[in-house]
Image 1 (cartoon, rainbow, N blue to C red):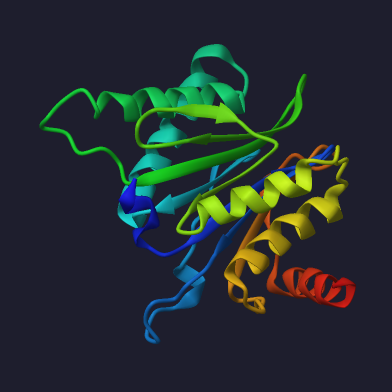
Image 2: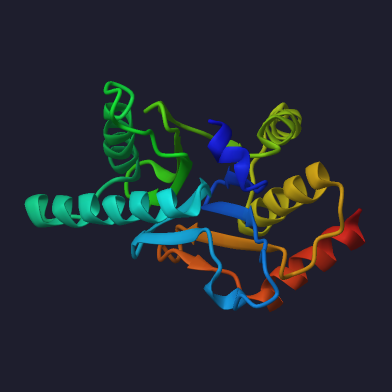
Length: 218
């Protein structure tokens, strides 16, 4: 679990009434690195997105395995894998490494978002111990506890969030717990909506618009 906080990154997931959003910090550790190639958001299937918080190498292997599980499910049953089942499979795989002394658990927390045809927007998180569960909003990484406390306070009132509010709540959460003014290059935002179930990331211009609206509102 220490490995998850080692990258000093925090990610946040929020579920609205018609959308699901994941936001994560984006840090480019070296001036020579091409920032286009740095990402913590991944497509598992066209409609399921994932944010991996923790060790990047472990994250890539976990994402690769999740894609394999999703493709295998579709080949076997003829329809896309549900988000909750995919998270369960990944948690089961992670749990195996806690049983053997010769295996190192993956130092990565995975958050999955997608739209279920029956249940609507879903947000699930799994950890290296193999624990997984669905959330209205959650966080992972260095400032996880602060973010969860902030989100709990927001969700004390019954919140019904539309797409825009969901995005801005997630961005605002990260901005508040880091206590800094975010720039459009500091975060990545991934989203799925009931009207467009394809998982996509927001462009820097779209992020800039939301950041401007948040600062004007505050």
